[in-house]
Length: 213
Image 1 (spheres, rainbow, N blue to C red):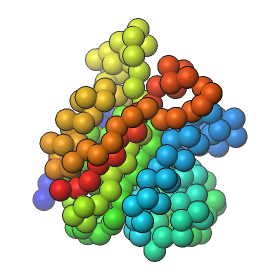
Image 2: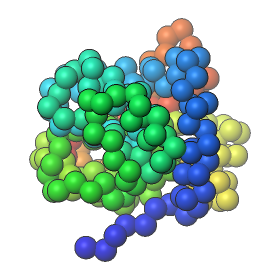
Image 3: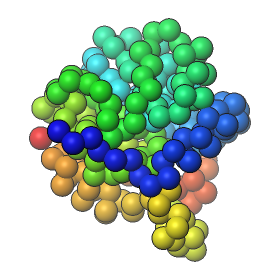
C-alpha cells in the first residue's frame, strides 16, 4: 500500500507547533477555544461507550488525558506529528499511549479502534488520505467525531485563499459531510459547538459525527 502524503508544507506547520507548544497550554486559550469542543467529544464517546480511542492531532494531550481520566476506557492513544507537542503530552499523562504519527499514517492495524476523534487539527491534514486512514483503523460501526472551524464572510475568504490552502484548508460543513461520506462513513450529526454565552460567530467551529459503514 502506498504511503499517503501530508498536506503541502506540513513540515513547516509541524515546526511551528513545536515552537507554539507552551502557548497552546495557556489556561485562558484552553478555556475559551479548546475546552468546549473537547466537552462535546467526551460526551459523544461516553454516549457510544467507546473502549479504544485515538485522538488525532492531539497536541499537548489535554483531550486525550481527559478521556483517559473521565471515561477510563480500555485504551487511549494520542497521535501528533509535532515532537514538541508530544513532549508536553508525555509529561501530562502516563495513562495515554502517545504516538509520533501523522494523521495520514497512524500505524495501527486494520479495525483496531472503536473511535477516532480530532479537534481543531483536521484543516492541517490531507483530508481524503486522513479519512481513508481513519476508516481503515476503525471497526465497522466505529465512531468518528471531528471539530473543525467554519469561518464565514470576509474572514473565510482570507483563510481560504490559494496560498493558505497549501498550509491548511477549512472545508465548510456541506463539503465536510461530502468528504466523510465519500470515505465510507454515514454522518449522524453536524452542528455548531456550544459555547454559551459566547455566540458561534466569535468561534465558528462545527462538530461532525459519523459512523464507519
